[in-house]
Image 1 (cartoon, rainbow, N blue to C red):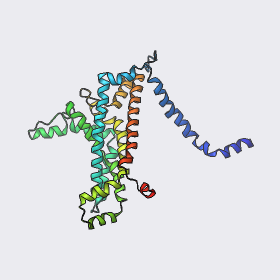
Image 2: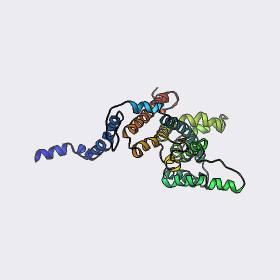
Image 3: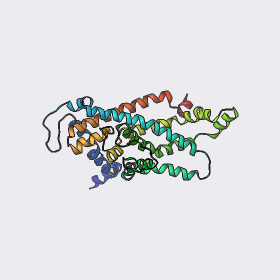
Amino acid sequence: MTGVKKFAKKNIGFLFIVPWLIGFLVFKLYPFLSSLYYSFTDYNLFKGMTKFTLENYKNVFTVPAERRALIVTFKYAFMTVPLKLVFALFIAYILNFKIKGVGIFRTAYYIPSILGGSVAIAVLWKALFSDNGLIRSGFALIGIDAPHFMSDPNWALFMISVLRVWQFGSAMVVFLAALKGIPQDLYEAASIDGASKWRQFFTITVPLITPVIFYNLVTQLVQAFQEFNGPFIITKGGPLGSTTLMSLLIYNNAFVGYDMGKASAQAWVLFVILMIFTLISFWSQKHWVYYADDEEGR
């Protein structure tokens, strides 16, 4: 008994993390590795597994529906991420000025980022922009035939992207915190030298917040490639697959068609793509991200 007490006392820290470790092994590591194993099989949730194959990975790039979902995902990510970052930085820059009632505006702009991913907001977005929604009905009252925002393949992905861009509050708050950390004496010195506000923004503000821009870029890129709520709730991936992102395709294969092997392969392709973009981002930061600590160490 004494030996047990000594062991417990010596390893008390390890004992505290045992619950987390069990949860990690059971709910994180095991599903992660098992999905890799299933991705090389034809495993069906109800029919079981009959063979090992590379067809699941080949189909992602050769089957039209799967290749289209991959292309749509790239379009969605490259459309939403830059727009979201630009809007977030623009609003943060404005809200950084000392104006009366600015706290109210900060809260108003941040609220959509809290509610934007919810089912209720997605349903509201659908009610606004569907064929019989409030927006088209309003245009009809004044005699204008508005586009079919959700049933036209040329508009549907754009409208889903706008919903994502509208949720820029979290990125805005991070930008706002970075802007407040810039020393004001830099702006005062630039003003004395005759630099305009526009020049100050690009020569002082942007270089000093590049670490935050980098952080928001990586996080928003990951979130964009994993987007699910909007396409699932609003368009169900339609029309004609124009809003079927990889995440939605994975869901349909796994929980509608029960083809776990195919869904696992698609999930791993998406994971590898995200890893590549993340590694490229980290590699590129040495060329454009300014760290004050690095400057001090030279």
